[in-house]
Length: 282
Ligand SMILES: [Zn+2]
Ligand SMILES: [Zn+2]
Image 1 (cartoon, rainbow, N blue to C red):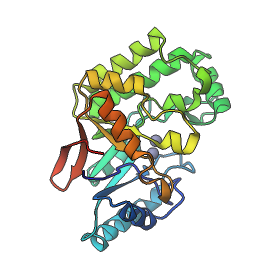
Image 2: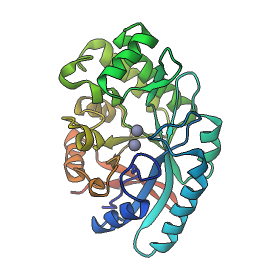
Image 3: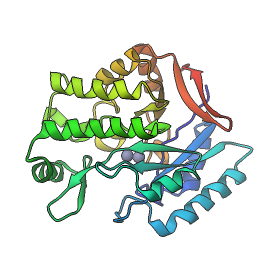
Image 4: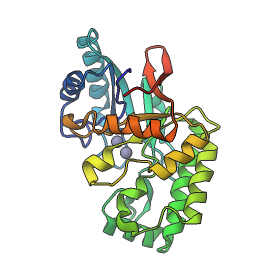
């Protein structure tokens, strides 16, 4: 199998290791290719997005490492870009897309606090609930539905090569504190979103980052949702959303097996000549 991970973070955003340390870890794990996907820049800078004035340095560094390791591993220049409700991708992100080998389209932001600061679905539960109170009058269902509608809109308008952590809301849904994913309205919201995605060229990632970093019981998206994805024949790939070098291939074998057990036969991967599919072997 072509072993790869296209979702990795580094010191340019909220990762703990340099890009080169991530590359060396990928080499140790016998990877064939590796994608570098720093959180893209946002206008109101945060401590988890790349700073606008670091973007050129980032691109240059990835390109240098591509050259340095070209005989050992194929490195791709990517970013995880934020699609924001009511805004979409910023002009900054749209212009960057043209310079990247690929990008991951992700929805983290879902609204603004009354003080104007944007909040994300993956902050801690207290902040999330405050955000839902202030932007959605405390209506969790409305917030979750808006989240999936935002992903649908992103898929329809841009067909991102990869759609990041489809059910990120689950990060804060320990013990079903927000919702039970078997509830009818939730299943319908997810299905509606998947019915849009299935008519695009996007691949949905199976992301192990929540298990590695947040003790989640399941990957993103959950097995329940992965079955709905399979029913619609939407392509998938396995990524670890690595924020540390040692999680570069976190639970990959388990995910290959899970995907195969659900009935997926192929995984998407990136090559110099574009996107391809490979048979799952583990
Ligand atoms: Zn993300
Ligand atoms: Zn990420």
